[in-house]
Length: 94
Image 1 (cartoon, rainbow, N blue to C red):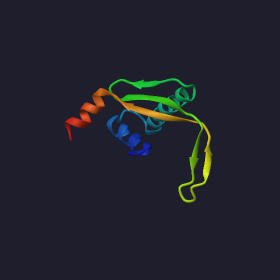
Image 2: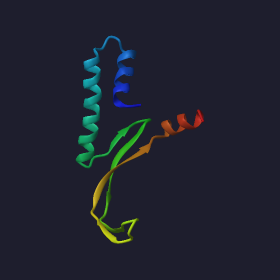
Image 3: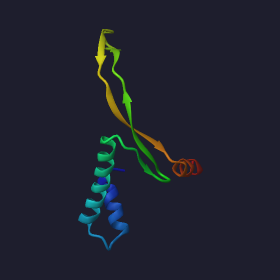
């Protein structure tokens, strides 16, 4: 599901809300999650999961085609850990 599909589904299930308001709400939620992660905060959505930022130190990698060493700079990457309720729902329907 892409963001526009999510907005469409929420708007369809809530006919009392304008489409533009649903779009603004979804964008605000995503923006707040991104802003919190950029500050280094943890974002937890109970029953769904938690977003955190992990630090990856700089390291020496290699070009797979030539085998020559390549310096890989440090970076911060987003990480998502599913919540228990989400895991249970996924495994109950499998």
